[in-house]
Image 1 (cartoon, rainbow, N blue to C red):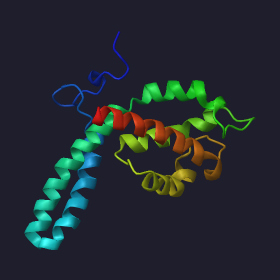
Image 2: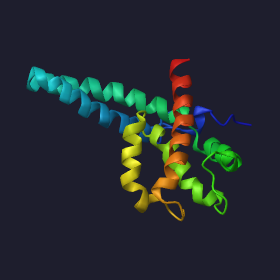
Image 3: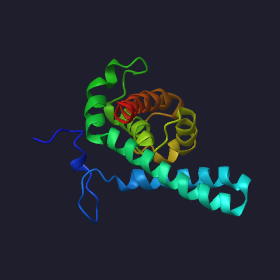
Image 4: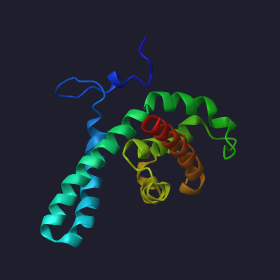
Length: 162
């Protein structure tokens, strides 16, 4: 049996090499490139180019690390078992109501958003469009998004600092 955190579950779509995480790497690279280019622009056009390349490499590595640290199947299994014990759980709601909020939280870390305020701001504006069949409004969903984000972020930090 394969361990749920086994990077072989994320093969490169071209080479089939394990642990590629092209989406996490790509998102991290794009964010890193923008940040690096902005920082390098102080040194002029050459600094912008160099900063963009260095930022893309560093961001790509960070994005890959985040994608490897967070297994959506494991997260979904955890939250489907734990959601009713959470302090924000409200009677009358089911896991189907909370699942999109949890997914938003752990996918934010997988996508390289390791800053809660950035993730929160993004989801606050996107929630109404992206909440699927959830009956939760943003105010009700936010604690679940944050709980899943915090759990995934801890996993990310353990994987990338341990």
